[in-house]
Image (cartoon, rainbow, N blue to C red; front, side, top):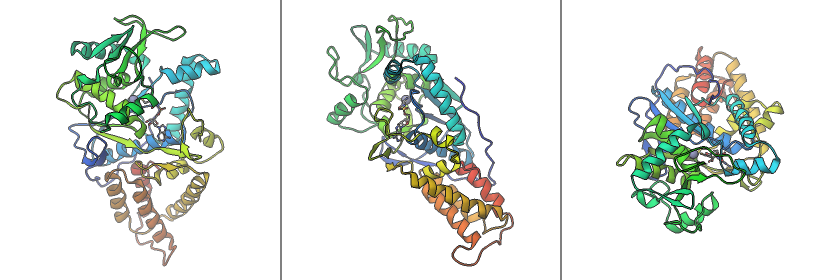
Length: 412
Ligand code: 5CA
Ligand code: ZN
């Protein structure tokens, strides 16, 4: 599948520090140590509705990692999927009476436009579930050879017991796993399963559902194996960071890791699992199923500057759970106005300290709020908000302009 077009990213004159991220599996900050290009897989959308602020926050969060790596001198190999066939998409398509494939195409295109507007760097491989069916089939066959697959009626299941590290990504106890599994697409109560936590690898054709041929008859891929197959195909095992929202830690990332680790014994799926916090609206997690949504595209249609949306998101640490309110957006609009005034001066307060502060903050678990605060301080010194205006650095504005673009994705 085609991704979206890449903005030009300025090269900074200084190299950023080693990048550290929080790893859910070890519940600690870990240094990323890419050998060759830094390899990142971030779970993509299920395209049945428009991009909301929660999605945007997650993708902007991982965009900061992409940028921090580049600023630290690494090439980045970035892969993202599109879950372009799955239960929620088929259910929505049936409910609104549109063809599921048309709905997926339309919402994927809207997502591309939203990502472009927000200056999120595109993945090198943007891959749909449908187009990866050959890789999914090959991975299921490999899991079968490892004795990790069994049938329930015509569906194929993955035996979580085949991965002796199962549970190590989310670190949940079994009761918690069982409860969450049922809430997030799992079927713990289905008869015939060996373990209630076992997940579907291949779902046999049901009446009215799309299907593809396979050695096990017509059907479609399970959700988790889609991501393991796509990530392994483009990145190989033991890639640097697997990313997504915290609602994906279990079962999704646990299961994907389980598949990959059975197929590639002795190697972890990813070296680190990074999870973004959940954005709420009206007191609850913003979600397509609840319908409490603020869409990026709707704001864009109302002439809101996408850079203000991005700044409003950057003011929250990617790992924190927070609630979207419209006043945060208007506040970001005002802040950008002040920043643009300072940048228009050309000269300003010395830029070297703000460059260091921003790169350091972002390399330290993508601490965008601290980076934004450092920029704000530079702006206030430059404008003389609290004392004398400091315009001692004649090149300051040009440097800060490049810094904002390269490190924070804010093109002003
Ligand atoms: N297609 C799967 C991943 S393979 C999926 O979860 N799609 S999604 O459209 O439901 O979500 C896309 C991404 O947005 C996921 O990383 C998810 O964790 C994240 N996300 C969804 N809702 C929120 C929210 N309210 N706040 C933050 N991130 C969210
Ligand atoms: Zn995924």
